[in-house]
Image (cartoon, rainbow, N blue to C red; front, side, top):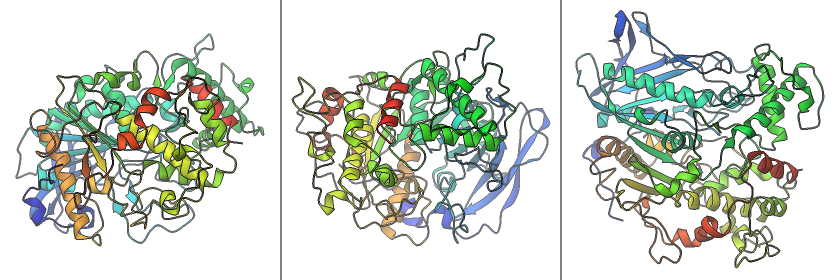
Length: 610
C-alpha cells in the first residue's frame, strides 16, 4: 500500500481535540430556523479556527413502543449547550442512573459555521454509536465508568467533532436512539392476540435523525445532498441495514462507512420477533408479580390485554435482564457475532426492513462505501466470556451452529473443530493466546474474529462496474480503555501483545486521544480523521485518500493479499494473506451457519451455556 497521505494540517495539529485547553472564549451563537424559532449553541476556538457546537437538540419525541415523531418546530432561542439524557441502557436502575430517560432522542452538531462564517453546502457526517443495541450514547466518554465507583479523574469525549469541523470544514452529527426492548421489540398486541409487524423503533429513530438532518442541516451550513452515514459495531450494523435492508431511508444519505460490522449477522424474522416478544412479556409479568422463574420467562404469563404502559422503567430493565439471562447473552458473556447472540436487535419485519443484509453482500453497494475491521476483534468478546467458559459447552455449541463442525459431518474436506485455531484442545502458546486465560477462550476468540468479522467483511463482492468501495484493516494496538474492563489488559491501553481490539479505532477516527498519547499516535489520529473527512467530501470522485486501493472480491486460492488499506502508526503492511490464514474460503463456502432461525440459534446457545 502506498504511504498515507497527510494534509498540511497534520503538521500543525498534534493534540486530540478532546484534550485541548478549555474554551475560554466560547460565545453564544443562535441559528434561526423556520417559523421564528432558533437553536442556540456555542462558538468555540480550536487552533485559531472557530467552529460551533450545538448539544442536546431534541430531534423527535416518542411514546413507549411506538414510532417516534419528528419535532416540528422550536421556540426562539432554544438552548443547545448541554448533552441530553441518554436512552435507557441494559441494567438501568432509576436510583443510580439519573442521566438516563425514555425522553432521550437528542442530537448534537459540530459545524464550521459561525455568526461570521456562514458558508453553505458543507459535507455532513452522521454517526451512529455502537453498544450491541443495548448500550451506548452519543456523548460516550472514556475511560468507562464503573458502577459503584467514583468517576475517573479525567474523562474524554469519544465522539468529538471538533477536528472534523475546525480542520476539515465538515459537519458532524451524533445522536441517541432507543435501545433494548424499548427500541427493538414490538409489544402491541392486536385484538386477536397477535403481534403485528414492527419492533424497529430504534432504527426508525435513526431514520428520524436523518430526516431532521435533511430538513435542518442547511441552516447550520450543511449540504443535505452530501451526507455520509457511518457507525461502529451496532452502529455499523445499523448503517448496513439502512444501506441494504430498507428502502425507507435510501434518500436520506449518500455514502456509508462501516467500522467493525459483523456484516453477515442474520437478523430475526417477524415470526422470531413475535415469539421473542411473547416471552419478554412473560418476563415483564414475572417481574411485576414477583414470580420466581428458572432463567426463562414462562410464556403462559403472557396475556393479550396486558397494559404495557403500566410498568416502571425499573421493571422493564429487570425484565430485560431476565430475558437476556435466558438468552445467555448478558453484557458479561460476550459471544457477540455468533448466530442468535444478541438479545435485542432490529427485525426483518417485511415492512420497514425487508432484506437481510447478508443476502445483499454479493451485489456490492449502490452507494460509495468504506468498510473495515480491526486485527483482534474477537479478543474482547471472548475475554468478556472468560468467567463463564467453564459453563460454555464450546464443542456442542459449534456443532449446533455450523455445518462441517466435526469429522462426524459427512462430505467435509475440512472442519471447524478440526482446524487448530478453533479447537479448544489445541495447546496454544502464550503468543497465540495474546493475553487470554486459556485454550477454550482462545479458540472462541479466533472463531468470533474470523467468522463474524474478518471473513464476513471480506465476503463483500462488488460488481465489475463498482469502483467506489474501499476496505481498511486497523492494527494499531489499543491506546485507551474504551469498553468496560474484563479483568486483564488484553484489550487495554498499550497492551503487551499489541492487540488491536474491538472499538480501538474510535479515538483515532475522531482524533479524541488524550494529550499524553505519543506523537506517532497523534499523527495517525489526524491522518485517519482526515481520511474519513476526505471520503465525506470526495466519495463520488477520488474517494477516501489518493493512495488507497479499491476493494476487489476475494476468491479461493488467490495468492495476492486482500486489498485492505492498513492503518497503523508506521504504515506497516500486512505480512500475511489473512483471507487464507483466517480460513475465509471455508467460512464463506464450506462452513455455513446451520440454523437460520433466530430462536433456534438462541436455543442452541442457551442449551450449550449451562
